[in-house]
Length: 114
Image 1 (cartoon, rainbow, N blue to C red):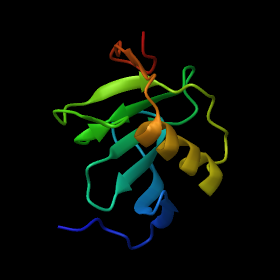
Image 2: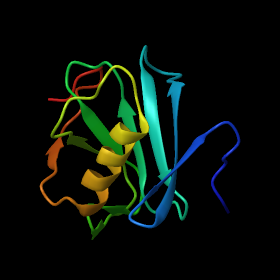
Image 3: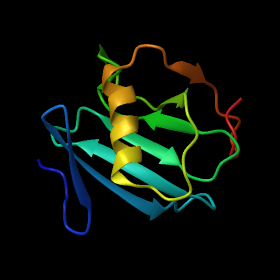
């Protein structure tokens, strides 16, 4: 099954295509940046305008390692800009696919990981 692309942006990073879009979260007051690889192995969500910048990995691979597909949260090693550009998305994808130093965090159930 392919990734829905209508109304969403495409980006190619390291010869792989990703779909990205920003949408309002149904369960929180935040907008969320969503990034999905074409094969759906990498699935990321990044809540925007939070006190602490973090990403939620929901896919089967993260930073070159196989994962079990459960939601895992990691601190982003950089702040997210107020405006999401293709350059910001490319930086997140490069970190999530080629990095190796992600710091896992626990979520406190509200808006800020601890």
